Structures are given as structure tokens and as C-alpha cells.
Length: 197
Image 1 (tube, rainbow, N blue to C red):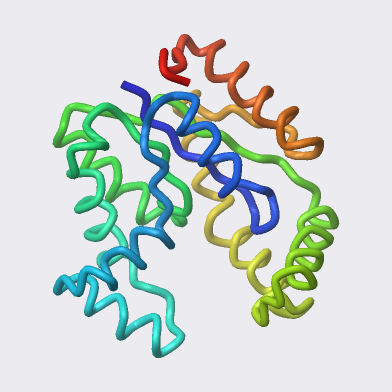
Image 2 (cartoon, rainbow, N blue to C red):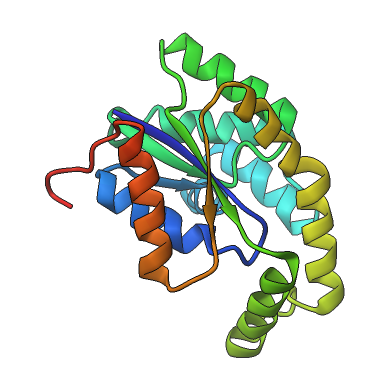
């Protein structure tokens, strides 16, 4: 049973590292973006609500985000643990996740904080924009997303720090170096990798 959360600003590589760490520990990576897309594709009532909000260009509200994530964590493959990416993204969502996990007599084992300097995030996102032609990766868009992260998401780390479960990882280096640092920190907490990994 390994229950993890990975947190970092846009461009920190958390999506890539999240998938690698989830594979190493034999648990599903639960990214809110993927969960929203799956709900929309499935055409569930929740998915239809999410679709309407995303199409209007708004952020999915906390209550709906929490409902969609709870629905995903209730699926069989997440019974043995999970890695969350993109949720909780603010303090209200932390409370919602706490309630859900307490109801299952569970708690997060560790929070991985990918520490990347702002300039590095901006450089990586600008490179991604050039490579993938992403229209949302303009300099203004990037600065705005980083500001939202600093204002809304960074405070959740303080909540988890008081619980002693945050591992701050240097997010600069090769993919393998960063993955190695994360796995070493988790193993130091007594979390064991999956035998299949």
C-alpha cells in the first residue's frame, strides 16, 4: 500500500516523474487531467458537468474535482495505493481528500515536492511550446500558471510539512537522476518498490 502525491510547478516534470514513480511502486498514476478526460469520454453525468465547464474555459470547481477524483480512487486498481498528480491543488481540496481517505482508514504516505527554479520551469515550458506547438505555453500564460501555483498550490505543502510527510526533491538533472532521488527518498521512508518494477 503506497499512497503518494507529487507536487511541483508547471514545467517541473511532475507528470513524467509521476508515471515513472507509479510504475516503480506498482500503483496507478492518477492525474486530474487524465481523470477529467476519461470522465468526459465515458459520458458519465460527472463527465458531462466537467465537459461543460472545461469548454467554457473555466477551472473545474473544487467540489466537482473532488467528486471525480474520489470516483477514480474507488476503482479496483487504486485499492493497493495510488500516486496523485494535480490534486489536491489547494487547501480546500486537501480537506476533501483527508475526509475521503479517513473514511477508508487511510492517509497519504508521502508528498514528493519537485523543487525547480522558476527560470527553469519557464525555460522548459517555452521549449515544450516550441516542440509541441502548444498555444497555452505563451510567456504570459506560463507566468499566469506559475502565479496560480504559487498562490494556491504551494500552501498545501505547508499543511503536509506539519505532518512530516514532504520530501523535497531537486527537480533539476536528467530524468533518471531525478527518478533516482525520488525513489531513494521514498525508500528511506520505508516504502518498498513493487517486485514487478
